[in-house]
Length: 136
Image (cartoon, rainbow, N blue to C red; front, side, top):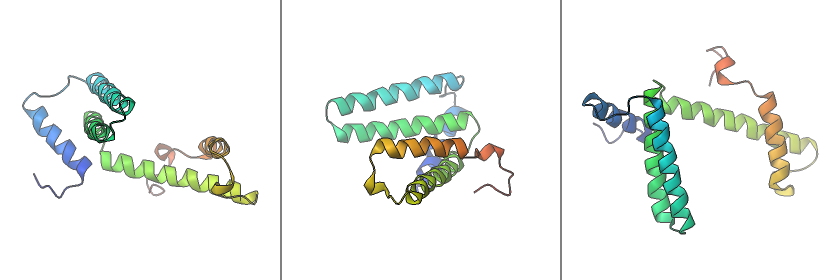
């Protein structure tokens, strides 16, 4: 398996290979439980102020999430690309809303940005509702 593959794609290929020999969860619920377990391990490491261990656990969490994508027959690279595009749209909305008021992100607190973020979510069109020609 090429090590040059993007990490998420390689994780899916590794887990597919393991699944072929029966090393897999029976359904998505098992993967979700694993994601929760890995997230708890991140939280525990952070509670101990061990950022090195927390980073290692984030890797485990990402691997588990890639397994969920595989289980759902979703391409994790595409999922993340689409979420990146959604984040960019919403953040541009926040910046534009502030700019319309003569402000920048440096002028306001997190609560104000969160207000406009929630507003952006109300105005955002989910990727699934766009025609394939409109998708990023």
